[in-house]
Image 1 (cartoon, rainbow, N blue to C red):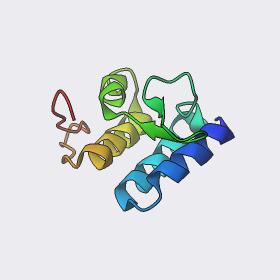
Image 2 (image 1 turned 30 degrees about the vertical axis):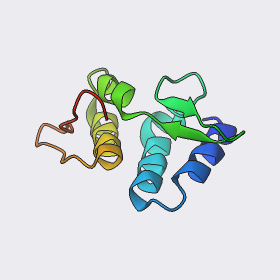
Image 3 (image 1 turned 120 degrees about the vertical axis):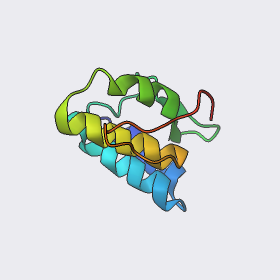
Image 4 (image 1 turned 45 degrees about the horizontal axis):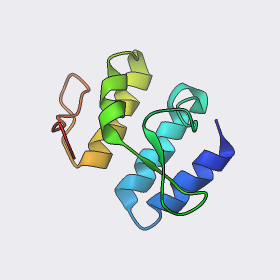
Length: 97
């Protein structure tokens, strides 16, 4: 896990309970390996040292994960998009948020 990216994501999510929860859950998935600058769902923000999460690439990631990691990423997507998580553990996400 990149501590620089995690700090930047926490800055971005401050003030939004759902975004903050999404960041913390994503930090738990795969021992934090999904919080890297090189991950397509981690996007730099306009402010130096800030990062935000993009739900669309995370939705695509779900199919490649298994078990608890898959369910946690589904929950992260649901938090970011305000969509319900289905029983299959996938959030119903529209094409463009």
